[in-house]
Every structure is written in C-alpha cells, then in structure tokens.
Length: 113
Length: 116
Image (cartoon, rainbow over all chains, first blue to last red; front, side, top):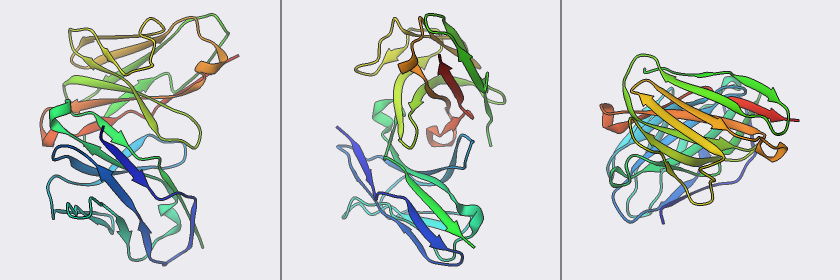
C-alpha cells in the first residue's frame, strides 16, 4: 500500500540555520502531497501542498517540490526561527482512496536562539 | 481557512465508562470526516472514515464496537469510546474533508483522553 517515510528526529538547529526535512513516498496512483505542522499542544495545520509532479508548494518561508522521479517531497526553509519549533508531518492523499491521508512518522524540530 | 472544533479538549474517565467526543465543522459542510489516534511522539493513525448518513468505514485492527462513530449531519461527527480502558488513553483528532479546494482536510485541535 501507499506509504510515507520521513527522516527521523529530533532535529535541533540554531536560529537562522537552513532546514531540510526529507520525505519520500510510495504510491500506486498520482497522489497529492502535503506538509502539516503541529505546534505544541495544538492540532495539525496545513503548511503547504502540491498536487502534481514538479509543483512547488510554499508558505511562511517553507517550500517543497513534488519530485516524481525521486518520489520525494523534501521540506526546506532558508532561515529558521525559534517559532518554527514544532513537529512536521509529511503526508499523501490519493483521490481514488476517498481523500484519506497517509502520514509519515513526523519529525520534531527544535530551534534554539 | 475552514475551522473544525472538538469537544471536549481533554477528558479523564474511569475504566469501564464510555466517553463521547464531538467533532464539528464550523464554517463548511463536511460530507466526510476522519478520526485519527495519536500516541505520544508518534504519527497519526487513521481509525475510521465517516460519511454523513452512512456507516463508518474502519481501518484494519480498529474495533468498530469499541469506537462508535456517528455522522448524523454535514457538520457533526461523534466518536464514542465504549467501556474505556487505560490502553485507550490517547490523543484523538478528527478532520473534515472539504469538497472544494482539492479535497483538503481540516483538522480539529484534538481531544486528550486519559482513562484511569
């Protein structure tokens, strides 16, 4: 079945450092890809998404490009802030499966001042 | 963006009792709602898919008689944990699927259930 694999955390960075969180997927169809963020004590929020190959999703300085050839959707940010500390989830959704989201295991990011 | 609320945000109950969690889409109609379970430091595990007016579809390994789901309207779904046990303690999250916006899911803030 479809699956999502993320790099393990926790990831600890200093403020203004460059961030990459790797995400790869396996899917039989043509899924949409998502990054969700969960701040401490809160629910999931959609960070960005891409619905087809070569699309780039971006939001709040984060970006990720849907790479079909490498089945990847890595999350990047050029300069992280303390407020970016959270857990980040990569996910895919296949329309043919009724919109179900399949999540990666989550990567905890801690940004130190 | 669309808003989903959950009630209660946290609940403590005794072993053997039942607990109901409500999930409401506040500003959109959700023909489909999903229920997830999240253990500490882990990812979300889909428990069931709930379609308005029909029976929920449960994922493999999820006991449908223990986790009762009702989706009586386009804005409300409920999850009842029956005869709760300490191993049912978890963070339960619902989401509503919007038929617009490429079928984007909007998540509730979650309900922390502790069974003593």
